[in-house]
Image 1 (tube, rainbow, N blue to C red):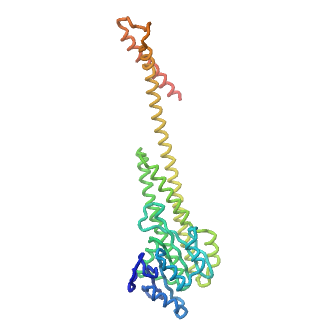
Image 2 (tube, one colour):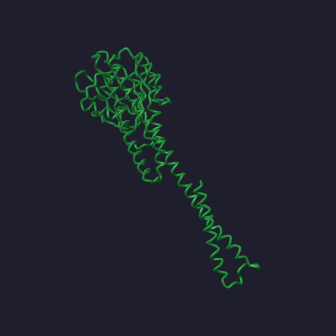
Length: 341
């Protein structure tokens, strides 16, 4: 939380700023508040070109967009992205400014679709503006890294660090998902299907949504890497390319996991169908074996004249012998048919 500023709301100060950092070459980043940030932005031309600031805003505070418009002079494309319905991950150039839309997971991520939210960034040579509506994991990891003294030399390097933090978060999500799938697979191998189909279905849906939202748009990324802004050094562009490649590898692992889940779902469905068929077969056998006794009982139970063995002293035992004999014959025919099949 910011210090020296009163009137906090929505986890931010009255301007909507959650935290701010000032980066100088060879020096650990220092905290700044919204007042200091506004003063720094007024004299940005007088500062060392290698110096930059990072301001992180909470969009749930309505004052944040007003402050960014009045002091930070963010690109129009950034403002449009904040209210755009499309939230697919992308990094594109607009008027020598990098506009990034990054999807991330909440701190309390529990494999629910509602646990995914969006982070917007406006990156220039001297100013990095990031904004979100709910607390996110990757941006929090980046803040902790800065506070622990990580040396970040440029605004693009800060963006690269964020993408790599996000890749690390995704790796952990994939590992947790793999652990869940392993558990379901062990349960399946032990013959206990239970409700695993529902669990796998929910897990697969969230992984599909994560991949759809997190996969960078190839066209926008290709255009950016082919012709980056003039202030982006070649080394920084190369690091950005490498970070996106690392991100792609994680997404590839996620695709493989989805395919594995699909195969498990098919295996479970086949096992359930087999169990259902077995149950129906047993029910059919019982019905067939009970058929002779039901027919004989029905015939002998009719209250009409001429019932066989009605006057015979051993009539009951004769009928009692006929019933199991007929049942045994029917059972033998069923077993023979099964062996032939």
